[in-house]
Length: 114
Image 1 (cartoon, helix red, strand yellow):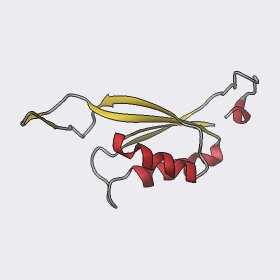
Image 2 (image 1 turned 180 degrees about the horizontal axis):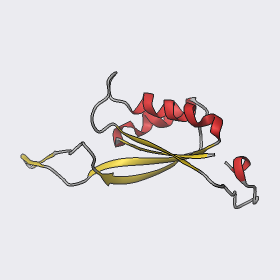
Image 3 (image 1 turned 90 degrees about the horizontal axis):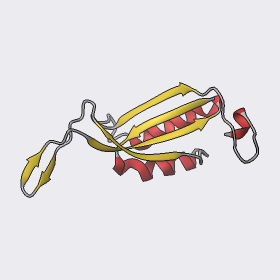
Image 4 (image 1 turned 135 degrees about the vertical axis):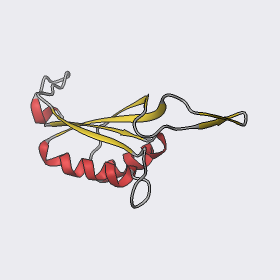
């Protein structure tokens, strides 16, 4: 089991959700986050250019069984990428081992609980 965490542009959320549903990945958690990497966004506020410290993003967290890792990652990449070569600020995907998963209602554990 793996936990896939993806940080993407807010504007790409609907496209990524649709791509995941098309790939039969239907269980996700979405959080609004902010931060910065190479991308340092800038905004125009009352005709003044402002460079904020943190850029708003969306974080997706998806627990999957091992056979769905590549399917999930590819769906996110295809939907979140800006243009054929991508752009700075398109986001990142992190894949971490998931030791266990427990469904509270039934007490099922492991891959069955996902």
